Length: 106
Image (cartoon, rainbow, N blue to C red; front, side, top):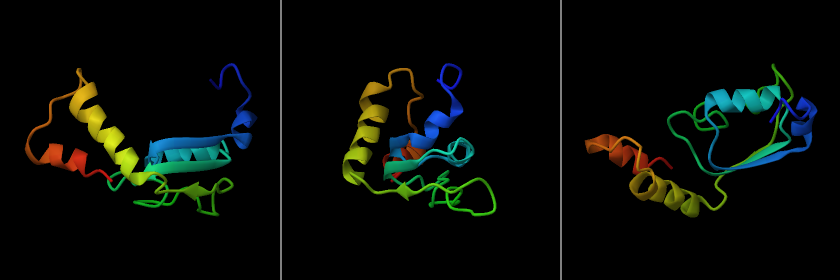
């Protein structure tokens, strides 16, 4: 997308995602100065906008961006569960406790 559009386009873009952005994505969103991020459920293992780190609000680096989490949280969890259980045919089949962790991601 950024090859065909100016980077400044993200300054007027709001991002809506199922799960809180990871640390790497939160940092990239900050560098590209996204306007705001809205997400359904937290990412307790890799979250970059509050769960693990708060890269969106650190005033020592690029301008901060607002984050709104917990929107339609239950629906977001169900979307993830459905994807990992039913729709991801090529995905690795879950084993033991790791699978339980995926289901409890939020």
